[in-house]
Image (cartoon, rainbow, N blue to C red; front, side, top):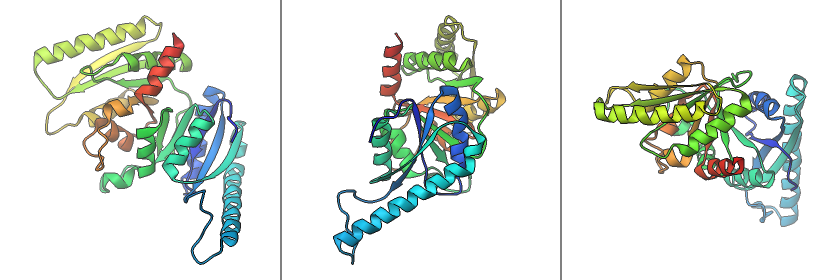
Length: 300
């Protein structure tokens, strides 16, 4: 598998949402002057061409046939939307564990982003059914930036980046990465912090740290505002407050860090970052600390 220069990886599952997800990636590809690699992963072990009740030869032929059928479906998806863009799109079919193969392919082709769909949020459904386990595993384990998209709308451009900050944690990497993105997209940055404490000493300390981050971004000739809001413990959640603010300021992108902010346990419970990924109708850019730190070092 040869590396592709400046490409965005879009894994699909042949659901009705596949062509929508592909269309939503056009703008991101155009802004990055990138191509798109459309990936479908056939489940199964690539080293064992064996299907029960069939010989190994028959199994291999059937798997090859299925591979070709999947490739044809990908090409059909591309044909249906190709008239809407001049972005080059390459189909790719691989076999293996879905999340592991997505991560493997993203490294081999040096994907600039991985774009994954998130089913439209329905508060009546269980959280685990709203965001797929493959998306969760990719977010947890990849070193590549992941953009998760819900619904059918992707804004034309990136004018406003929302940067939720938890000033009790290390924020330098996030601020550096926000500066890079804002310069790239010629966007403004809106820093937002939501807290559930009314202790004025705590509030004052957080405001000082947020103001320092705002000045750092402004020093790089980027328009930046900062706001701290108090919530009511037991009534509000930090994720709800962030998403509400994102809609108030018409944010085009919400930037979070995954492994620093997500409490990755089997039940996937209790994380502000997860709540944002699951519920946000605005694209969310999730960065691992390794990925963000590496890019920041390169920019020095």
